[in-house]
Length: 176
Image (tube, rainbow, N blue to C red; front, top):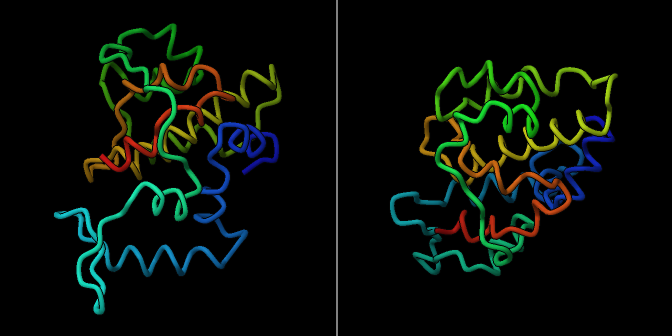
């Protein structure tokens, strides 16, 4: 991830979580793999030999991911996918082509036009768009997924101001 985009992701409050997933710090990855192996998505609990079933508390979630639980209520718009002008403002031109009138976009197709190269023109605006796309992909594929690897665009209004993205209750959404 380019340093300017990383700065924006940090500003939004998602860098601790990203650093666990990335290759910079190897210490967090084995922990996540071990926890993932013991997670049962049907009951939303961990299964350990000694204690059997254990639910994740908001404190556990925060300790594992670095994302807080609580904060501003998420803004959403179920018809945002129809507002091309707003989507281009938030995510840039590629998002409109990827959606093509659909309500959802796949994480794989979303990542391709955004973080393969760093923009040269209108840098701050482009960096914000790349950071939003990255965070949308992260949130959509890890917290708000339906195992199809497609993300709904209806939480896009919560991503308008990059520095305020982390103020929303993403942890509460992930736990629900």
